[in-house]
Length: 497
Image (cartoon, rainbow, N blue to C red):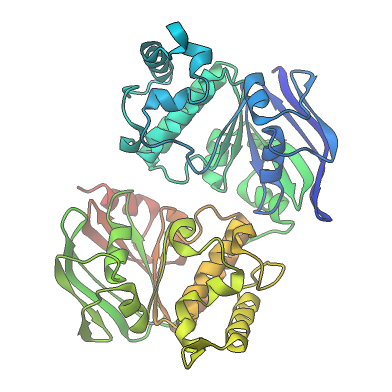
């Protein structure tokens, strides 16, 4: 295959901290090349250099044999490199076609007297959507599309730029299994057209399903490049983290104790119906199901974020009415949302301020915050969870995804919960940080907490849960013991309705 992109000796430092150190990388036409590494390995810096957002300190990037240096994003796009970001960058009020050609309207569809020819833009958009096999009207406002459909529009937009190199950053983080299948079909079509794809994901099964070649970075340095067919999961993990993780899911030492939470016939119209279960101290109860099964909505109702229409909630045998998150926290319930950036932390605040945000009352006296008490609590949590930060005053937005997730967990733990609900706790987190979070979940159960784990990754559910409650379209279809729970059994019940 023809080499499209050649990177050699690429280095970049920020304030004395070396983010990339003599990295090399080769990408061929019609190839899916996975770029792997823990958070902080240098992947984002590398991508920003390729897209013209950063200038390297040293090294060379060649696109089809020509240097790619000192060029801005528009020039990089013009030369054929495009990126599908993890967070969709769309204007909701504009149509699909308008988003696809935003900023380039006059270049592609200039009409008389300087007006934009909307009909031509719609025609061009329809051709690109048809090329990808997408049944979407180009005149549909983006706000009415699903996340998956928005992502497909971003791919179409990249193709409208005549992209030769397409960078995909965690493209399946918010997609259902069916939508992932559609994306993979489109990737195979793009390969046949000679488009080269740099694929970034923390999901091992995806990497081995779609990648032809894998390159690993660790701490900003190049570790190696291998054909995907020559690697297995344990070897790839060892390359990424610098050590073998022989057992990704540590053995649990927890003992099941008294009942903490019981839910009876809980219903919220349109989301979940007649859900009943209980969870005990020292137990991890997994909530499994396909996207839209009602798992997150059930957790939100228990935590008081949404109100159930009917049903009962019992805490340690006593019936309770939880009308708000404040009430839930007061009663010993903690909740880690699936969207940490929107609901988990405040980007403008420091690590310490985020950690103590939900437990400030315990650090107050006479209406004033006792700074030493707050700092002591935050420092202890930073140490206990091994949060990698320059200090408690570092803005949380500058931490890696795994460390941001630890801050969100620490914030909840400082409220001293007896029950903690974890919704997709490892989404967008690298394999090393995942392992630490798995150990923490086991430690929480061993310390006597009741844990409800919601995850779309069945290996997590199977590896961590003592029992598994399966939901299908909002209805409970099975409550499985650890011995009964297998991927096949869970999927069978998840698709029952």
